[in-house]
Amino acid sequence: MARVYNWQIARKMSYWYGESRPKRQFAAVFDTNKCIACQTCTISCKTTWTSGKGQEYMFWNNVESKPYGGYPLTYDLKLMEMLGAQNWKGDIYQGQTIFEAAPAGERVLGYAPHHREYAYPNIGEDEIAGVVDKGMHLTLPNMVWMFYLARICNHCTYPACLAACPRGSIYKRPEDGIVLVDQKKCRGYRECVKACPYKKAFFNSCTGTSEKCIACFPASEQGSQPRCFTECIGKIRLRGWINVPSKADENNPIDYLVHIQKVALPLFPQLGLEPNVYYIPPIHVPDPYLVQLFGPSAPAAVEKYKACHEKDPKMASLIQLFGCTPHVVSQFEWEKDKISALNDKKEKLVTVPVTEPVTIRNPFDLKRSVPRMNIN
Ligand code: SF4
Ligand code: SF4
Image (cartoon, rainbow, N blue to C red; front, side, top):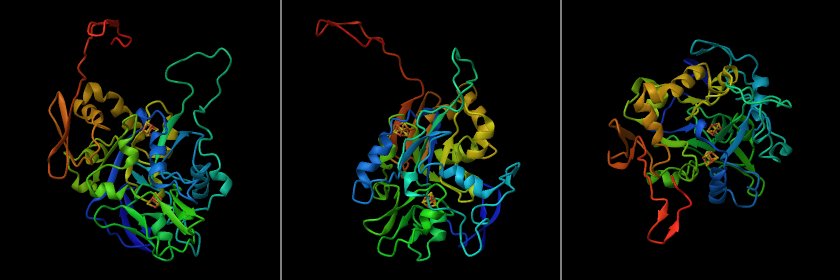
């Protein structure tokens, strides 16, 4: 095993291959506070990529209600238990990653889900943590909670699927860091299914090969965001590129939210994969649960997010930009009352007002001589 540096756990760790970062790394930020679990993303991905035979159970994008939902069922709880103590000292992870905890003769600590665990993709949906007693009324902060967690492949910097593949069928593209399965090389050993802790590699029993989210790479090559991003009703997603912390660019929206503001965090950083989808944590969930999911910076990220409208108009404006363009956002420009998204060539993709103008319409439509139903 090689020694590589993982900035998300602030230390070196063991990995099957040496450190080799792509020229650019696919990255995204999801704002969990805006997700409404409409599942439009799930269906847009399903109808685009996984409507064929053997793909029936595949959800390259899924949205699960936490704490009880998960696809496949309890995938995260199982691995947390297998891994044991996951302590942090400041930003430095003290426990083992899934590469370091691999049993003798294996490359990664993992498990293969039983097919029944894929049978109920929306089990636990909208279930709250806690009991609603008779006569209970709303108090703040909320006594009971749940939130929606949208998930795709993280196109990890240190992919467990890639490390575990005995045939070298999985590769990380040097031009954009997207992780793909070479369908001609794959022999369906399912080591990737076992190894991916996020369970985002799937076996197709009709083709005998493994398949996974491809980050809509044909669209990405044309400068467009993936389908699950462009269709997102809640406008929770922003697709861009991430640099390593030492090269953080304050005009790059992903760098700004992840490295500079530290308000967007990776999912289960302690596992050691350096995943590249980042989450703004939910504001109404107990800290210990957030720390387990998003690492020790989660409580501070929540406080920063909650205060951004008063204290950080630039960050509040950037969050307005999510979902406002179908194109990949490489840079952004903020000018107090408006914010613009820019592409690789620094061309403006869209400009959004920070405060939506209020339009008061006549309650009576003179042209059609009818009262309006939607007065606002
Ligand atoms: S999320 Fe899973 S399938 Fe995707 S790159 Fe990481 S290990 Fe591989
Ligand atoms: S489309 Fe957007 S808002 Fe709807 S479930 Fe998916 S991530 Fe959430």
